[in-house]
Each structure stands twice: as C-alpha cells, then as structure tokens.
Length: 148
Length: 144
Image (cartoon, rainbow over all chains, first blue to last red; front, side, top):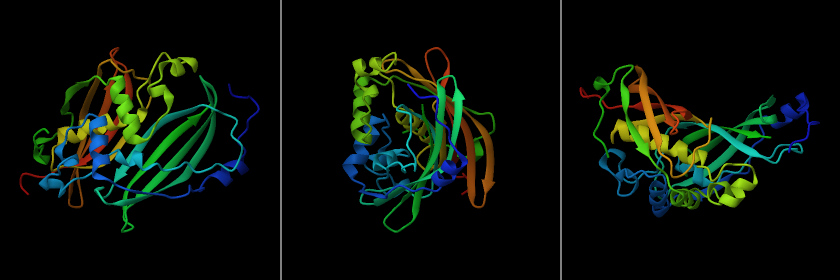
C-alpha cells in the first residue's frame, strides 16, 4: 500500500515536466502488423493484404503501442508500486507501413497529486511522439497513468 | 470490411451500429504477445487475484484497439482516422460480452477535409460505460 508521507512539491513538478525518455527505434514488420490485427479482432484487409485506398498494407490505429516506447524517468523516488492506465488520446498524421522505422520518444507533459477513493495518487500525463524514418510525425499518443 | 460511409450521408445524432464482442483469455494472450504488454493481470488468474482483482482483466489498450476497429470499420475503407481518445473507467473481463456503441456528435469541414466527430464507448453486460471515448474521422464526399 502507499505511504501517506508523499508530497509532490512545485520543485519536483517543475523538474519532471519536459523530461523525455530515451528514444526507441523499431522496424515495422508485415507479420507483426498481421498478428496485431488478429489479436485485436480486426479483419480489415488493409492490415493483411493492403487495399487501394491505403496504398498497400498499413498498421491498425493503436499498433504503435507495440513500438515499446519507454517511460520518461521521473527525477525523484516514487513511493507507489501500483500503476493504472487512465486512458489515451491519439492523433494521427501519416500511415504506418511495413518497413517503416519508428522512433518513439515520451515526454512528461504534466504531473499532479490527488487523493481519491483509492488513496493518494500520482497522475502523470505523457505524450509519446512517433516519427518515421523520414522524420515525419506519424502519430502522437497522450496517455494518463495513475500510480497509487 | 463494411461499406463506405460518405460525408453527405452523415448527420449529427446519427447512431453507429451496435457491435458485440466477447474477448477470450486466449485473445488476451494473443494481444500480450502482439503488443509486448505481458503484465500478468491479463492472463494469470492467481496473480490477478493475489493483488485484489476479481480475476483476469482485459488490457485497457486492447479496449482502445477495439474502439479503433469499431469506428474505422463503420467509417469504411476510404475514411481516415484523425483522432481516437478513450478513458479507462472500469474493468472488463474476458468471456463476457462487450458492446460497442456510438453516435455522431459533429459534422464539419476543416480546410479540404470532411470531418466527423463521434462519441463511442464500450459497455459491460451491466450496461455501464467502462470505456468512453471519442473519434474524429475524415470521410470521402460523394461529390468528390
């Protein structure tokens, strides 16, 4: 269970916001896209054979989750062990295709402390930016996670 | 794959067709493998129970993906998803029906794009919205 002594100071907040994760680079494989589509139960042929409208095979919208973006490291000790995913906000700019090399970088956008029904919580908002090998942003994913 | 929805055919308040899915534990294992999220609460029942959960729970990210499949399936092959949001408000469990529902909230043009905003969500068998979300899709126009 969480301790009661944790306080998120203004200084800790300021030092956290803007912290970026180490970039991860992953090559997108055709077979991985097909396995992901099968796992989410989506039989859209755009993900397996490609369709004229998408100009070939593309990845499903949340496939970028599998690019293993790493969490930015907070610059202080976190006294909580449990982690809940609060939700995601995706914006899409370009299709992701087999052969793309995706670089993912997470950035701390916000950090707050709150006390709710599950006790004291630390809520972080992290925005992951995904770029392809041309440097174009293919998507961003802003996620909220709750530690308690 | 469904048929194509055109911008002219969409109006505010229009409902998306209801879809029912029933993810199995096997599907959660498939998702763990495909996504790389191997947190034990999604396939190891004794572990899930040991940390106070009622049982294995569905990955939030899989529910996110289900909402993505739901809205893109409705919008059709020539539509482009611009934005997808969702919040994880409640747990969902494998081998229970999950119902996807939604409706159109806004129909508008921005630059060259014909955009439609939708409110979408997943409901558990008790009718609670465990995973509310929104989506913005760009649709083709009949008039080209």
